[in-house]
Image 1 (spheres, helix red, strand yellow):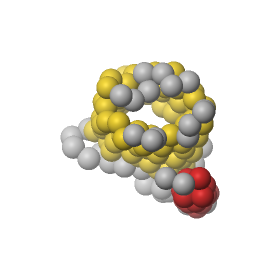
Image 2 (cartoon, helix red, strand yellow):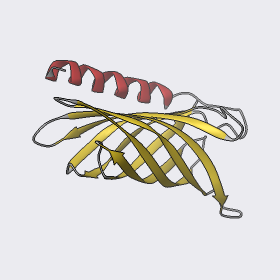
Image 3 (cartoon, one colour):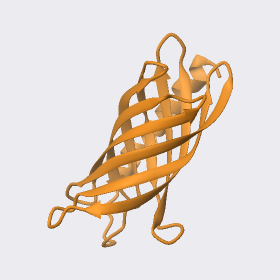
Image 4 (spheres, helix red, strand yellow):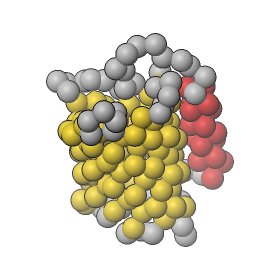
Amino acid sequence: MSVSTRFFLVICAASVVLTASTIDSRASGSRDGLGMRAGMSMGPDQFLIGAQGEFGPIVSSSFFVPSLDFGFDDQTTVIANFDLRWYLLPLPETGIYFYGSAGPTVVLSPDTDIGLSLTAGIHIPMKNHRRYNVELRFGFGDIPDVKIVAALMFGL
């Protein structure tokens, strides 16, 4: 993937996030949203920026949470995650939830690698269906070993 194509994808992702930030959702309890993320990965050591969505519930109480990250180091990588998320433990009277996710991950660099990601995270609500997500991702296979990522999500 050329540098201009990657730059175009970043601009598209930023446009979607900015559009989503202007939408005011009135649906109570809805978690559908789009957002932007940033973080660090180890193995390879990279700075990450990207976009994330959350849709559902899909099956039972699971939510589909795709994300697309761009990792910057000696080589730029594109990391696509296709997770199912489960909200596990609420903190009473705060709106804060701990969650777990699992799903396949595809890394596009000079080679294409596929693996599995397991995630533990925290969902921190804000006003107007906006929220923060902070997560720790563990990779199995030929994908980043550990990622620490924070996301700012906008409700749809």
